Image (tube, rainbow, N blue to C red; front, side):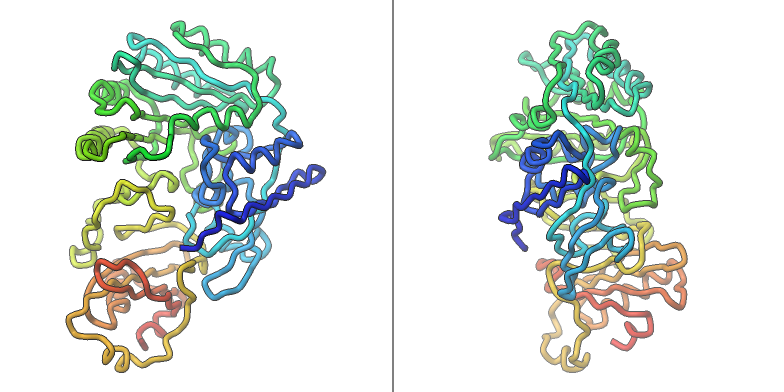
Length: 468
């Protein structure tokens, strides 16, 4: 693990409306620096979040309707690649790596600085309304219709939580990024519906809105999340969410429906490594509790709700919502022996999720690297490598085949004791899809079955891999 938390440099060029930020900044620190000039760009919705991970995972935030995601506002990034080079990735140079950095997560190198496009954001109309328990169902229906007809300047986030009496209530938070007078008119129908029992919508600074949710995530709580994308808030989906909300095992748990809309929804799905481009909701079941002895009950409730929501979810997941246990596909596309071993679950969310099942991902060529080890072709012969290992060692091997014609990837894993495990994984993958002459294979050997991926990457053509 490389700790970049002390790299907190920030340079703002107000004339060019550009900021260069180092990866140790939090959203709050970045926003404070840009707001000193009345500027901002889309980040997240909790100010303690790290700016680097948020951007690399896509970055859904309050300004996404008008200005796109955080990754859509990334102009270039300085990256230390796995072979030790410092490169500047942008539209003109290292375009494939730049594509991968915008939504693909933090597994492509060590980003030492980000260059963002900024926008004028002097004051926003923000805050939220809360409806009484008796209106929870109608409020969710209304929120969906209201959001569908809203302009790009408005983004919303609905949530379901428990009131002081343990009853499900619906809240809708908003951000209108535009003239305040117009914003008051736009959000008028939401404030008049019901009416709400609480209305906290008012003009405020962007930094105030960005930190408004911080108190809901104090340090020390246990967390377990499940997430996917919800195309529409239908009556059946509402019934499921409210039925489970009535049995929430913790008063700190919530169900969030953050809207992805406007400019962010109109970007082509293949333009960046964030393919979830549609007017829909990031549906996040965010379980929180204080006593570790309550873990089993809270985890079970979260899983049951997520399973009950499957008929309504579109599939896929926002990378920044991933934890130690992913919302992974069933794995029926590969034979059982190619599937990975079961992982011991953790309630702590790692900074870099690792795929657990074979998947097909659209993506560019040449964007795979590792921030953990430098890639190097082995100078040792297979025979000498085998002599250093005992026959009973079982190691994890991975392989990824890059299909150049349609710029897509196929991933697979194997756990075995044979030295040529990576080649065997590649063979299994290619049995699903024939290779082209210039396809590349990214293969990696690991440590023992419980040790995770520890070996360096080998980047080979199929011919080169077979020589291993």
